[in-house]
Each structure stands twice: as C-alpha cells, then as structure tokens.
Amino acid sequence: MRYLVRRVGFLLVALWAAITLNFLIPRLMPGNPAIAMMAKFHGHLNPAGLHAIEVAFGIHTHENMFVAYVQYIGNTLQGNFGTSLSNFPNSVTSVISKALPWTLGLVGITTIIGFIIGTAVGAIAAWRRGGVLDSVLPPIFIVVSAFPYFWIGLMAIWFFAITLNWLPFLGGYTETATPQFSLSFILDVLTHAILPAFTILITSIGGWILTMRNNMITVVAEDYVKMARAKGLRPRRILWQYAGRNAMLPNLTGFAMSLGFVISGAILVEYVFNYPGVGFMLLQAVENEDYPLMQALFLLITVAVLVAIFLSDVATAILDPRTRNQE
Amino acid sequence: MKFLAVLRGGWTFIRRDKKAMVGSFILLGLLLIAAFPTLFTPHDPAAEIYTPGSGLSWNHLLGTTAFGQDVFSQLVAGTRQSMMIALVVGFLCTILSVLVGITAAYAGGWLDDALSLMTDVVLVIPTFPLIIVITAYLKSASFWLMVFVLVITGWSYGARQLRVQALSLRNRDYLLAARARGESSLYVIFVELIPPMTSLIVANFLGAALYAVLAESGLQFIGLGDISTESWGTMLYWAQNNAALNAGLPLWALAPGIAIAILGTGLALLNYAFDEIANPALRPVRAKHLKGAQA
Image 1 (cartoon, each protein chain N blue to C red):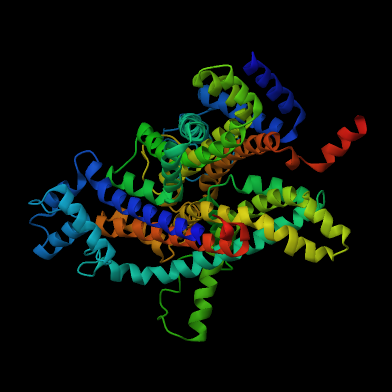
Image 2 (tube, each protein chain N blue to C red):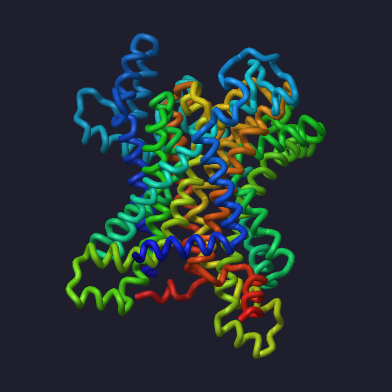
C-alpha cells in the first residue's frame, strides 16, 4: 500500500509541476508573449476573445501574479482552458475532444501492441541466447532507432502510397466520406491508420525488444531459474512464469520512461500523415499562434503520460509482491 | 594516471569490438566532413543556379532541389550543425547528469530526496511537446537556444542512471576506506567514485547526443528551427514544404534522413558497446566462447 501511496504522491507533484510550467512559460519568455499577445489582439478580438486569452494564461492585469496563479490552477482543474483562437468561438475543450479519440485509437493501441510484441520477442531472443533472433534483432534495431521517426513515415508514404499506390496517406479517413457507424467507413478509417500505425510500431518496438532482452539475460542466469530447470518444469513455463515475469518488471518502468519518447515520435508521425489527432492539432496550433489551444494540448499530453505511468506503477505493484510488502 | 589507464582500456576495447569499431569510424568520418566541408562539396550549397529537380548525375550526385540547389553539397554542409548539436548537447547534458546524479547519491538524506524527485519529474514530463511550446513562443530557435532547450530537457535520464550506480558503489569497502583515511569529499568523488563509472558516463554522453540529433531534426522539420541555416533538419523542412515526394524528388527527403540515421547509428553502436562494458553479460555469446577456447 505504502508503495502506491507514494506513487500517487509523485503523480500529484508531477501534475503540479506541469501546470506550473504551463503557467510560467509564457511569462518567462523574453518580452512576455502573453502580455504582447493581449496588446496585439486588442481591438481585433471581441471582449469574449480577450477574456479567452485571459483565462488561458491567467492574466488579470489588476491582480498580482500569485492570485492569477491560484485562479489559473482553479480553471485548469475544472477543465476550463478558455476559447480556441483558431476555431473561434469554440472552447479549447470541445476542439480537443474531437481530436482525442484519433490519437487514443492510433497511438494508444499501437503502443500497447508494440509493448506486448516487443516484450515477447525480447524474452524469446534472450531465452535462445545466440540464436537467430538474438543475433539479428539487436543490430537491426540499433540502426532503426537511429532514424528520425517522422522520416520513416515519409519513406513509408513514398514507397507504399506514392510509388506502389497501395494505401492512402493523408488524414484519418477519405475527405469525401461522412463519419458514420458503417462498415465501409470503419474500413476506410482502418486503411488510413495502417501506414501511421506501421511507422509508430517499427520505431517503438526496438526499444522494448532490446530492454526486455537485456533484462532477461540477467534473470535467466539467476539461481531460481536453474532450480526450476532442475525440477524439470516445462521450458515454456519457466520462460514466461519464472523468468519472463521478473524480467518484465524493469521493462514496465521502462515503458513509463519511454512513453514520452513514443508520444514525441507520434506527434511528428501525425504531422507527416496529417492525421487528425492531438499531435497534429498541437503543431497546427503552433502555426496559427493559437496559444490557448497549444497550452491545453501540452497539458493534456503530459497528463496522459502521467496517468499511463501511474497505471504501469499499479501493474508493477500487482506483478511484484516486494512492492506490496514494503515497510 | 588512472584516467590514462581508462583511456587505454577504452582503446583496446574499441579495437576488439566490432560495434565500437564501426561506430568510431562513422563518427570520425563525420567529424572530418564537419570540420572541412569545403573539401567535400563540389558546389555552393546555397546557390540556386542549377536545373531544378534534376535526378542523379555525376555532376549532382544526389540530384538538385526544386530551387535548383545541389542536394549533395547541402548534405555535406549540413553535417557541421548536427555534429555540433550532438557534441555540445551531449557534453552539457552529461555534466548536468553527473552533477545531479552523483551529488544525490553521495549526499543522501533530504538532498537526495529533493534531487531525485526533481529528476523524476523532469523525466516524466514529455520533453518534445515542451520544447515545441517553448520554441513556439520564441518563433524560431537559434543554435544556442536549441542547445539550451535540449539540455534542460535531456539531462534527467542520465542523472537517474548515474545516481543508481553511484549508490551501489557508495558503500563499497574501498570508498569507506578512503573516507576513513580522512580524504576530502572532492577527492573521494573524483578519484574513487567517478573512474569506475566512466563507461556509464560515456554511454550517457552518447545517448544524450543521439537524443539531441533526433530532437533537433524533428524541430527543424516542423519549421521551429532557424530555417535559413544549413542543416539536415532544415533540408527535410524544405523538402516537405515543396512536396518533394509527390514531385518525384524523393532523394531530397531521403538523403538528409539517411545522413541523420548514419550519425545516429554511429552514436548508438558506440553506446551499445559501452553498455556491454558496463554489463559484461550482454556481450555476444559467440565472442565469449572464442575467448574461452583461446584461454
């Protein structure tokens, strides 16, 4: 229990740090963009628009920084991020809610698939030490991990979509189709997801394979694995329930750590494929100087990562009795 | 003296290990190109004077851009910036990681708690979106600004790793002995604690350098870098903005990506080799058998 309480504590501290960063960044920049923007939009935007910026940045010229900070935290906790400037007069929350399912579907599902396949392949590679998988995979993925994610997306587009003309590569679905719950539309969405999903998988799976393999090599040499062998247990049972289960623990922590990298890669992959998700929206917000939307998206991505890390902590607590018995 | 011994050990290792050999070879080659780009460039990389969109030829090894620039010359000229980013960010990140990680482990107590908490928070906040937000406010990031942003977001992983290793070394007998002799903390840290951690520190340098190269190219690709400079990321930006893939100029986008990957592979191969020094269990089994046979 103590372990989980500590992890909840950490989650809260990290959240607070992210919100504070979000509040401070526009103020710390040279020339204070928040104030500069207020001046720029004065006269161009109606009072509601100006108020939107005030909410997004916690600017209230008549109040001091501390009061503004407290109000800002209050607004953030209520999910009130003001109004999107590029989608006026829609609220930031409503704009984001349209993009969120796309990213959860694409990045969420591919990340989980990548983690499961990568962990399994890594375990098998280490189990058959010196075998084909063990000698071929590490060098391949060392090279793949050195490619920029978005560039692999570009090459996938060039080869599969432009040269071979097999798959679509722009957007989440055919532009002329109307979103509805029909078989043809679902198929359309799936075919549009193939190339971006493939790109994310290829670039993220190597990390899982390599770390799992390295953990597994250490674990397989442990006495309890030799003991299990000596007892004559079936190899498959030793592989998954004795060695694999323990080797996975650091990989779960690693999952949490590298999630940030995966998300970063996914932002650029969405950009390359014009995929209508959160990452693409973030870059569009940057381009349109829609700062309220940009700030909210940064916070959303951070919260998503933090929640995922917390879930992996819970999984660790379930898999590793030591964390539960901690004093 | 100890430092020299470590260097010599490193050289013996590089000579023996194929991964380290290839990695060092790649990095040395790129350093050479970065130092003397004019030796390798047949054309002025910025000049828009050739037939736009021409394919491979002896005169233009990688064709030309839609603006009529020589792709190969741009590639060569861009090497310097990526190498600089890799070296400078890698170096500064490593210093910060060593400082935070070893201070935390050596001091212990509340200072360790505070530094570890800070490290973990920086570690979990997704860096790339953060960098995007920061550079978006500044419109475009100059070289040193890019360095600054990449360093403040990139040191935490190394600090955490170094702290863990320093903690495991902290209570070893030889360190306790040094303290019992009455050596100063600085002596214990620099002479007794850091030398055994060299391979991990080098691995961290290489990891941070790789992170810097990839993050920089990503930022430049989306137009948040200084788009007027010559670099691989900027090449990708211009290629993407002129639909190079659709326009039948795939080399324009292909070449800088491969260049980044070559640099990245060099760093990753060396990194992997240094991981194997730190953890001998990871070394390829075949090599181990051979050594056993010779003994």
